[in-house]
Amino acid sequence: MTLLAWFVAFLLDSLLGDPPHWPHPVRWIGNLINALQRLIRRVCQSERALKIGGGVLWLGVVGATYLVSWGFLWLMGSIHPWLGWLAEVWLIYTLLAGRCLEQAAMAVHHALQYEGLEESRRQLSWIVGRDTSQLEAPQITRAVVETVAENTVDGVIAPLFFLLLGGAPLAMAYKAVNTLDSMVGYKTPKYRAIGYVSARMDDFANGLPARLSWLLLSGAAWLIGLDYRQALRIGWRDRYQHTSPNCAWPEATVAGALGVQLGGANSYFGQRVEKPWIGERQREIALADIPRSAHLMMMASLLALLLFALLRLLWVGA
Image (tube, rainbow, N blue to C red; front, side, top):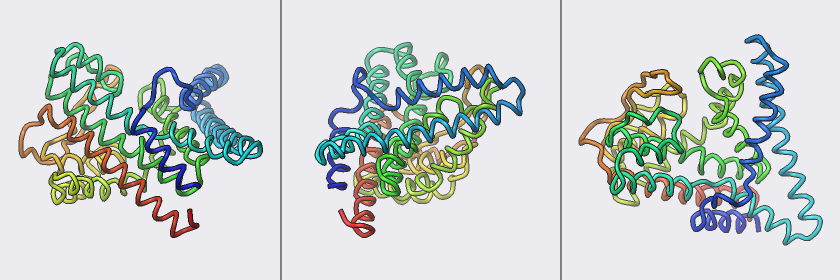
């Protein structure tokens, strides 16, 4: 029944994505982060105190997410086993972001193709942290491909990995780790101290899933007819060409599969950030690379589901 829940949840995500007005645990986690962050900032004034407060923030949010998720599943299961199973399906469904990421990428693709730069920049601003106001079409395209590659890990592969290790509660705790990083894990003066623990723990949590993405994305490239040899070679060669210890693994693999360069300098919160180039420029990046990267992400996600389901069968049975 557990594996059936995984596949049903994956199918639901593939078909429905994340409808904007449906209840979603990640939004509740975000509200909790904002509330605790305001409280900590009122109490902690120095850099050192904010670092300690950031650790308390991380423990409180991740711990509460795990306990509430476990308690919710236990309560539903104690009422009726089928209710518990449906609750598990719903939680896993909310953890997966493959379809949502594909839709966001294709919205930028549509805007670039039919609606012009201003709308393309606006659509892109919803899915990246960089300044989009001055980007031209090739830069917008590159940003989308990078985002799809990076979020293949934290949007699908990592949640499935933690689902394998500890079920829906641990996968939900991972989602809290990832949400903390996306909200406070920046190196800007405002977040450097309070987000220090969140950023480091997100790096740790994504370590193995990011490295697995090298193989999964290369396998997906082979299945859909992209250059899987280049994906393997560039993914390994450029795996550390990023300020993050994890982001270059999927980005370099996708760059190799597509035969383009990713990376370079970008502006974040008004600050220019220099980043090394990833990949080899066999050709200029093109608009069609957005749907190619989305297809690559969805195939790698399916491979991850099949791999982890097989490991679950070998480990403890269905």
